[in-house]
Length: 416
Image 1 (cartoon, rainbow, N blue to C red):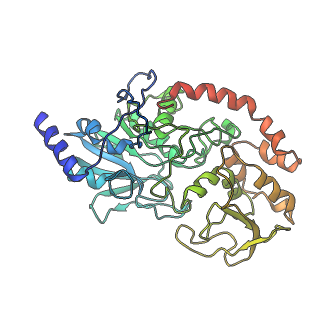
Image 2 (image 1 turned 30 degrees about the vertical axis):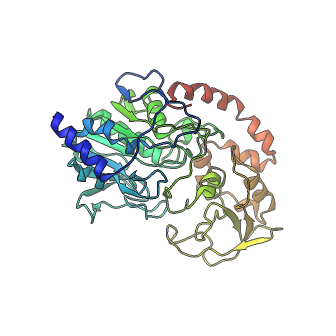
């Protein structure tokens, strides 16, 4: 065993050539959770953070001799340089290190991250590795006992963006639940949250639970995947109060208040830092008759529709990667370009309120299928906008819930 670990470690440094830094200490953990930490080294220069996947020396001992399944997409990589411009996929890296990866579970957008939002992801075979790919988006959102048969450990390594309706945290819930039921440990390889510098939005009400909102948290939760997994366990959100055996490899040198630029787009319609920053505020438009820029090169950086008035910006959505059938395809939309807006440290409701006020047909602004309510996690937000409440008045109604959540989430912090 020791010889195998030594050989793997040598191979690792020859294959990857990455450097290690220090990391933050973790708080006290619930039972069956392990978080590998080391003391933080203070320097005059803030060291570059290093994602959990890069710290292979910490998790190879957990994988040697095990049959491994990985929940992954295109962001599940090991970086080979500090600038994070050169990388190898986690699956390819572990196979190279003779780890027995037997299966890949794919979330929304698929293993390679090319499927449209909401598009059913199909099972298949990865052409590069020959590994079976099992979809966790569509009818099968939770791994079945049969799909987990023969698996000794499941790795979850996906870049999140910190918004409740971004479905990777819903996939995390179902993976943890399925593994808890089969007594299979889960290993989280943590990554920074690009929207981790604030929390905001209404708390989801239980009657409006869905795959775009499973837990009683605000729209912007300010946690990493590792911290969120701890919260799922600690708050007993899994079915029948199940508890998942959880290990987390934290990000070294991560501080949630320091901006982090994602080196790989987390999904087809979040192409850059600006779109990721605006996403929590603009995603509400997915439940209205307003386009958030799908079918353009400025996804989640613009918004508009054929029914808005008094605007100086226009665009025409066309099919493209990630939007095969965009809203208002080939129709002129009138709206606003937000690409020069200052980075947000709050949920901005002014876009939504302004669009409702200036639309030519208010009765059709909110889509009748109730999707806006699922995104908001409450019926109150739509009612408040229709009643003409100001942004300040609406946000005042969130204050108590956000204060309670702020107290709650600190119990699960791994980072400052």
